[in-house]
Image (cartoon, rainbow, N blue to C red; front, side, top):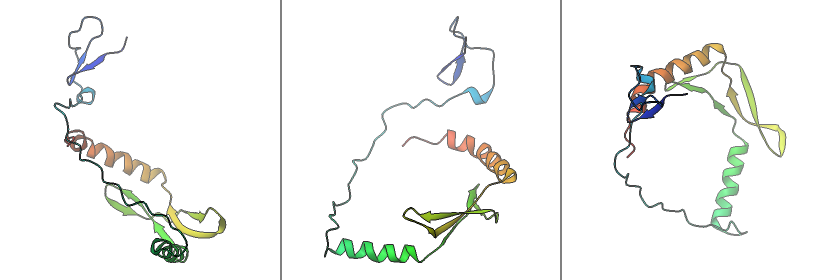
Length: 130
């Protein structure tokens, strides 16, 4: 039977005593108390009806976005990485129109990402909920 996690210690399912294991990866942080969650504030409801300011602003932004090709790098450990091995992001209704190029990860970048995640694990795992 598997071990159970309890208040940062591994417990043996059979006798309820702590299992003989000192592996820090089996520990977890217990959230004590109730977090204070702020009341969400919704954005105003817009109609985008013909002749409205929001519709004109949307059309202007769509024109800007359709004339710009965005370069999207990998972000590993907070650093931008451009591999040169890219794929295109296209408009859903016009597949020949490229909106962005995305850099693809290879074996090396995947290894870097795993190492960066492992290095960040301790700090992230001790981050307060509030």
